[in-house]
Image (tube, rainbow, N blue to C red):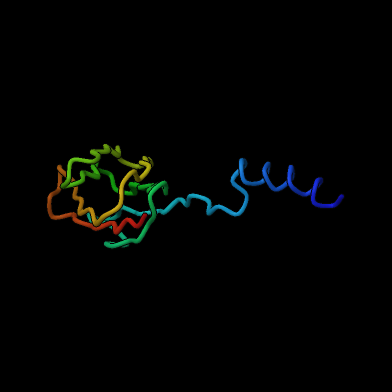
Length: 105
């Protein structure tokens, strides 16, 4: 009898994603014309959140063309990572600002 009760609960847990890893928010700061940290590791589905502490607008522009996020001065912006692989990015307004995200499946 126990197994008949356990099966529906197990099926519901699987459908609701029990035991699956939650997506993370990875914070990257733009301050004093630098990106910190300059390299982060993430997983597909994670969110990268950029905090622009500078008095200037910045962008987070992927060299692959996957995203081009504008981050106005003293604001925050974010993007969800959709595919695996290393992605170098930079600020279009200040090309010396460069960083890397290593995205795993």
